[in-house]
Image (cartoon, rainbow, N blue to C red):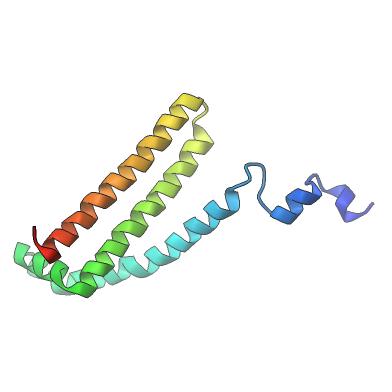
Length: 132
């Protein structure tokens, strides 16, 4: 018996490497890329904020966030972490919620929450840097 006769996957399925849903590979790669980005950005933030904010005063936080490198780093950290959160929650919703209406509502709520939190955080950093 040849290899193609022993497998349950179709020839097209073996070529595409997608699985039953047809979109798992992109989701898998996006989660891994955001994980790598967070593995770089999170320690950077902890170390740089820890060194800059030793006194714990409000003025120190403002000074930290008004430096361009720190502002860009914080914006990237917020954007990547919220996108990573959205991807993870999407996977949980798809895997465990069975009713289509509930699944749709939770997916929309998840997307809206990620966008709203990201917009508010990025807007806050931009207002600190460019004024109101």
